[in-house]
Amino acid sequence: MLPDMQPYWEAVLEGIREVTRLHGFRRIDTPAFEYAGVFEKGSGDTTDIIEKEMYVFEDRGGERLALTPEGTPAICRAYLEHGMASWPQPVRLYTTHAMFRYDRPQKGRYRQHTQFDCEVFGSADPLVDAEVIAVLWRLYERLGIRNVTVRLGSLDDIEPRRAYIEQLKDYYRPHLEKLSEDSQRRFARNPLRLLDSKDERDQALKEMAPKLVEQLSTPAQAHHEAVTGALAAAGIAYAVDPLLVRGLDYYNRTVFEVVPNDDERAQGTLGGGGRYDGLMELLGGPPTPGIGFGSGIERLILEMQKNGVTFDDGSVASVYVVHRAEGAGAAVFALAGELRELGIATVIGETGKSMKAQMRGANHSGARFAVIIGDDEWAARQAVLKDLAGEGEQESLPLGNLATTIRARLEA
Image 1: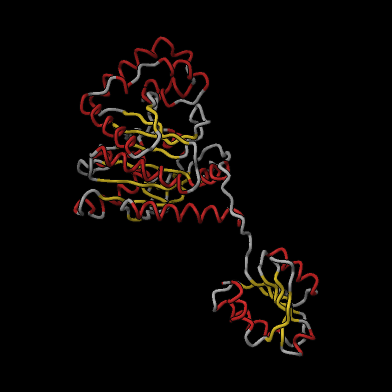
Image 2 (image 1 turned 90 degrees about the vertical axis):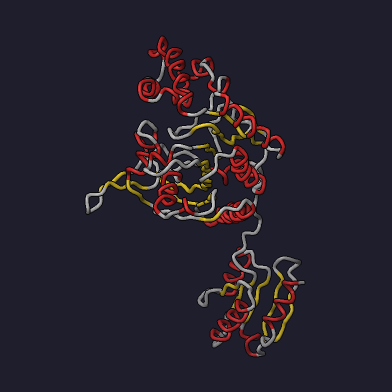
């Protein structure tokens, strides 16, 4: 991320700190790599992450390790290993973490990307589902991202879902030869993920497939209605998407994605997640309900730019010292130090460059003032203070109180 992009990063990170604080989340940081089994158990061996994208290596002790491809299983492991089940429940955690996936790089999606993750453990309350969605929604609002909608679905509970999966297989079975190669493979191993396909060959069949959200069990239906009611009450725009399944095996009940309104196929998802009440057990822990989401920061920055969010201040300093006087180097350095002590960012022009070249540097720096010390100024122990932001007004001032004068001008 190059310097011009850093103001966006700072805005996103500050927004994350604020919305998580307002919703009672605490920060956690997990390692860059984990035991590979954490993700193989947690993400499911039929997901693209495990089958195609995870970076796996063997260390010198023979352990199979993986660069973190997604945050939830790693945070679950931390919850289990560090006794968080004994804390007051629910436990609300968030992180911003580098993720690694061997995928085709494209704009906003890289093999190393940074993800904002929130997870809540220890509550099956549908209002917690709505609260987690609200964290993401309020962050996007704060960042100037408009015209987005929450696509909401439900995957029911695991047992009631089995009957639906058989129904789905019966629907697809006569059409197997028309499906993409990935979908033909998923038919046998994880039929639910047929609805997650983005391949053009699968679209028409996917649209006509039976819809799980239209035949939920009674508890899951009540849960779903509580979530939609809470979102509506909070003014969060949502649409029920009967084809939304998400790409990971561990979800149940609520699933969601936030998508720009102009993205009909939901290819440019900004963030998404869902409920995973059985994941802790897969990782060897006790039954523990959970819900969370992930949102790629690089993708968010692109959406901020698309929404016209800009940062005009490209300045690296408020003051630029231009000097070309014999013997003035130490005094120039002391002046810059005094300015910095007052909290004023200051750049010193290079000693070997001409005054003209240094003034070009001052003009390009975005600084508000140039302090000019030539031979005549140095002899009089003065400096020329030039306002680079106005009409170029300048005046000669004593070096002794120049720093406090500049501070007063900047604060005026």
